[in-house]
Figure 1: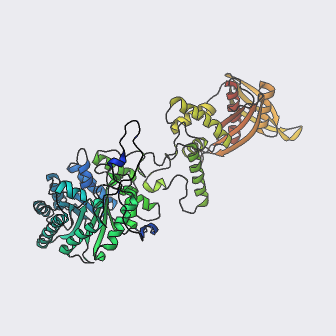
Figure 2: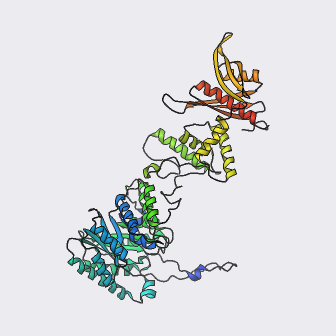
Figure 3: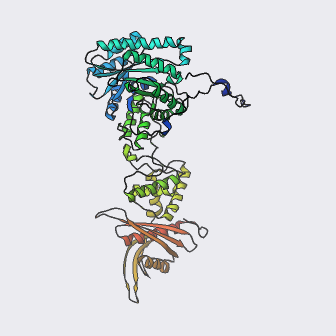
Length: 583
């Protein structure tokens, strides 16, 4: 099971532009020989043990490492989220870390159900200093590591396999002996063959078993073997093969907590972690939002909420994701990307018209089905489950369609626009977005709607009306309306089979306005004593141009007549258009 240098395979020659030929410079990672692998058929049905390494592995990667107050704030957040294992520092390598560990212990800041973890290289004076830092703690994981990869053995340490095993065993023996001298503190042993992914499988097993022989774990007192992708070197399936091989071949597996520490150099740390759990791992070390060296550690927020969307309780509280993000950004002094899974500002936002329409329909279907099962296109998680609202699900720019505009008008302002009106108004919104080149806010959309349909009162304005049955035809009504025409009041009369028809008749006979009403919709937009109604009318001018009018009033008849006036005013303001062109 050793990893050999792979044979180079022919590749295309470099381009005429003089680029590097990767086949001459980089070697493909050799797959693991595991033809009967079992992990591809497994499903994650329970969360792993989580260990946050934000305060150490994440902290060492910051441009400005956390000071004491930021460390305390991060630790408090991690505890409140439900992490039960938290790596709090490398106390032998930094006085700041040493002091922070002492502060946690002496100020009794570690809850009884939380285990702190401290990290140390396998060097005698560092191990001694580590044990000084944890004096008086209730329960501590002492995490020992040394690098085992073929590359580091050759170019960093200049040692063979026996020399690397000797380093690991001496550190394990010292930790064993110091543990025996500790009173009142439960010590859990953890060992990492650092750069595991670049280590031959049989040698990784050999060095871990040598450490195991020193620590003598049992099923009741397990050792943690942490297998880091210190550098992510292969596709996630190969990492899973490495984990499954180790899981199946290490001795006394029932006495081991098998832990993962994936990094994200290839951008597949989350996938590698998930496949590693499927391959037999019990535990994951990672950071909030993936902060860490180079491209970062594995992201436990994404991992946990991935489980959540599959119906598995991750055991970590993500119900206020904005608070988690804001705290992490403050402590790390690093922004979380707007498109970061689950937590970014824009991840529950659709600008695309087709996406907006699908989300709108999905929300409506959810309300009708009342099944409780989340099924909304383009939203793998209910934003409310992580403390978000639906207000920002749909946002409008030049790429948006009528579904998005309709969604905003409904969710923000309670208006259910008819489909044809959606299309007509969306054209105006898109013109505004194209002109500005920016996102159009709900407030801007509403302002445009008001300016287009509700505010214009020139040249006509509706004042009041009364109607009585027509004495010559009982099925018709005689309507008398008071309107303003260019600021002057006048009374007009018309006859029709309803108020709208009679009003249109009056406008035609007495004002010379040739307009037909094709469609009409109405609905309430509020409840209670101050409830208002809104009416929408689709009208056609003499030249065939379509105009939509909108009216709003506590009285539905008044709202309807206001809507007709709204259409008339648009017709009056419009420049001549070709017949059939929508406005």
